[in-house]
Length: 344
Ligand SMILES: *[C@@H]1O[C@H](CO)[C@@H](O)[C@H](O)[C@H]1NC(C)=O
Ligand SMILES: *[C@@H]1O[C@H](CO)[C@@H](O)[C@H](O)[C@H]1NC(C)=O
Ligand SMILES: *[C@@H]1O[C@H](CO)[C@@H](O)[C@H](O)[C@H]1NC(C)=O
Ligand SMILES: *[C@@H]1O[C@H](CO)[C@@H](O)[C@H](O)[C@H]1NC(C)=O
Ligand SMILES: *[C@@H]1O[C@H](CO)[C@@H](O)[C@H](O)[C@H]1NC(C)=O
Image 1 (cartoon, rainbow, N blue to C red):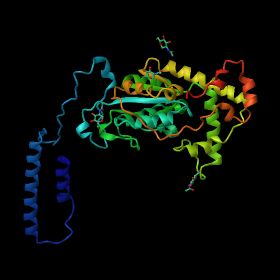
Image 2 (image 1 turned 30 degrees about the horizontal axis):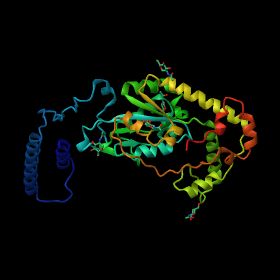
Image 3 (image 1 turned 180 degrees about the vertical axis):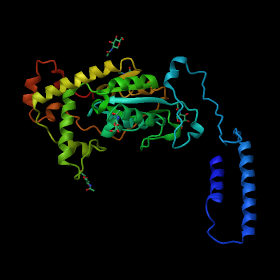
Image 4 (image 1 turned 90 degrees about the vertical axis):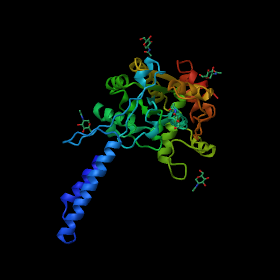
């Protein structure tokens, strides 16, 4: 309101009139407009209950703090009332918001999982925002990005804006998360961010998915476009028809590295509020995903995703050199990966 008034005044005082009216008429009109604009401003300021300091014209909006006495004290560090800079939360001003981050690794079902969450009316999960290198350059750029997301100022197709009840995004462990874990854990703890781990048990199936996805990046099997996720069985079958030849040495290295990263990450975030989910468990038991809604203290609703699983057959059908892989893993600690399906 005050801004409007001073803007109007600036225009009257600061710019020259473009047309030449008689001086007297101009002065009269100018004076009348000034008097009425000052009058209107002062009336509307008084009516809206702003406090006016006579000389500086500063004002302060007197907001009631949002408080829900029925929220137990131990929950308080995890609820927030963000005030976005880009819009007003309007009637949801006092809807509490919880902060979360889905911590995962590539080809572990996190794309599917995130679309499930986003089908809930109260959840905004903003995608893989740290896939952009500049945002993860160092802890300062990471914190600045997190601040923007958690203040509800991040715009993405998932944004539900003013009425969001839980806001977050998807973060791969290799996107600056492990490298900057100390600063990130500190941020999560001080801001009350909850970690949702989504891990995959069968690291052989994960490796097949990585190789197939990487093949499609070049081969672009679906009408000349690369797709990491598909929405129809037909497309899924086309992508699954590629059978990778697996270099067993590389496979074992990846399995070891991936296991170590999961273990380390779970340890780093042990002191942070968290839930650990496995892709296979979510597929096997469709009710399991409700655990996330309970964790985020949101009402249970049916969740949907259009994603269609790509590799659904026994692994022997998805690996070109199955005999070699089978012989190499048999009798090792990784033997279980050969037999387990994804829990269907
Ligand atoms: C962090 O990275 C940004 C962007 O790459 C750079 O501008 C900034 O100087 C860096 N800050 C520190 C503390 O290294
Ligand atoms: C969920 O969203 C609806 C519609 O915007 C809103 O009325 C309700 O308060 C929200 N609930 C929570 C727990 O955020
Ligand atoms: C794209 O490819 C699918 C099969 O992968 C086919 O059914 C569809 O007609 C194609 N669409 C276009 C526009 O070429
Ligand atoms: C987390 O910490 C608790 C006790 O502080 C410990 O018992 C547990 O094993 C730890 N978990 C992990 C994954 O490090
Ligand atoms: C499925 O998951 C839900 C939620 O975690 C659990 O209560 C239920 O026991 C599970 N069902 C089976 C068959 O494991």
